[in-house]
Image 1 (cartoon, rainbow, N blue to C red):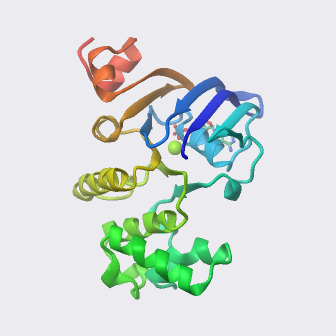
Image 2 (cartoon, rainbow, N blue to C red):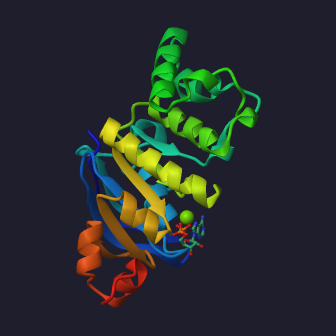
Image 3 (tube, rainbow, N blue to C red):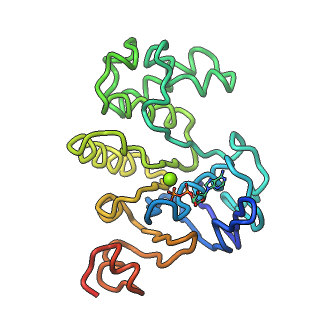
Length: 238
Ligand code: ADP
Ligand code: MG
């Protein structure tokens, strides 16, 4: 569960090629960070994997199955949106249960999975509150809870912390890393922040204008950047 393979995937908007042919394998259980400057195609690549954008060509395999043309809900992946995507008029319980309800789960199943996710995220005593009665960090955890209940093959995060203040970002980074250690589920995390990439990733994918400049562990990229772009971006001395 949770292996994702991109094979010669491209994305063209109008006459602009945003992703030239790209190959990438993400292994089951890995924490993979897509990093690169604004506009380099990180979100587009994540949205292609999620199925929120159609590929222009190429193939996407999820656990060996061809998912290139599969609807987002059929891919078994969960995108974590920023906390402001919560429903303000619904309780935390209902916000987290929402995808289960949409999938037709019984109330018992909804409650069991919501309470399990709340335990993992330290939200058990907040389930009857509304998002407006929570701190920024708690709201972000609710957004993650909504992904956890779906028991996805992989979690997809697109700059989930960018609207939090600096101190909270550090805490949430740590919480997401701990969540990965607990669940051992594949996570793909998009950021333009090198520090986030270096501290969270098992594997970093450095993107520049839709191309992969280098793939490697934080240590490999730091010790042996393959070119000046990677060296400059990661901040190592080459
Ligand atoms: P990042 O997330 O790394 O900042 P994006 O994936 O959002 O980058 O965007 C990559 C490039 O694709 C940008 O030049 C952006 O303007 C372009 N782009 C993204 N989405 C669309 C779209 N729906 N239509 C046209 N161009 C787009
Ligand atoms: Mg983006």
